[in-house]
Image (cartoon, rainbow over all chains, first blue to last red; front, side):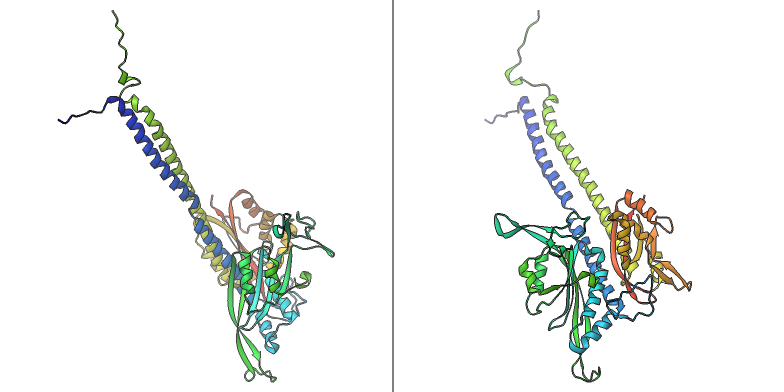
Length: 274
Length: 191
């Protein structure tokens, strides 16, 4: 015989508490999901916006460099507020092509004009970002100018082979980092301009990009002409060479010696360049 | 005569059909408060970030419209791009300054970055206005500021508002040469 056991009245409350606890567990899960969503929402969009802004800046900078004109004598500068109509001025890219044509190299005059143009255009980000400007053919780098923030590496006292910290240098007496990097000629400045000569056949530039973190790059192609014989006639003794122009920038970071040495850089007198 | 009836063993603590459910209300209320708190926080965060992204996007739209292909040949080109701007919910200041003026601005600003930003209004690049031969106009496009805005107007906004700054290099064609300049766009919410 089957007996019907009615639930006793005093068990009701216990069941209600258990139900409420189940509800609490479900709500905790939902709350966790909501908070996770709130903390991560838009992170990808935000990164994308930053990337877009950086790329837009670098591509605009490259266009500006390639459009602009400079004095043929790099010892002079153009002052648009007080124009000097006796100055001999030409497009920067025309000067580069003309200089390249005779011996496939650029003179210091042209390199200085290029470096100054890049420096002027990149000035808004120059305090916080390092950058490089390069012109290369399939065979070699015709120009490789690098703007680098100077850091002093502080070693780990327990392990001299490791560096623990890097501090910025400055020669500005009002800066908190003033005289962090003393040299026999006085405090080292915060930034330096280098002309480098890396081999295009090794991967030194790619290794540099791996070291510096996220770099934003813009590239363009130009046609360069090179005379192949002594007549210097474009129609007879010349060949057209495709060259790449690269402008890349990254947040200033220290570059380890191993990568730096492969770039074969020579520091330039910044006052003479800018 | 009054009789004392002791409660039955199984009825101890029983305070009625509703009263017995009172302890279960505690986790329910805690759960509801937690859920709606998290929901409100998420909704606010979502709205706030969406507005920020919209402002970032609109600032970039303004900058792209004004700089075109990064080459400014005439004032009318810049002026017509400025007139064509349609942005909702944002006020803005956009001006082009000669890149050689950065040192002058930095000197005047005396290491104060916000001051440096407001001084841009006083160093705008003047470009020849071909519609009025012999005259030149500063490359300026603003909305929600007195016309023409001064560095004091801009400083007031910068001091009191949350703002977005974008800067892009542009090449400007002067009578003498094509010179590098910088387009600076500052935007803030209307209101």
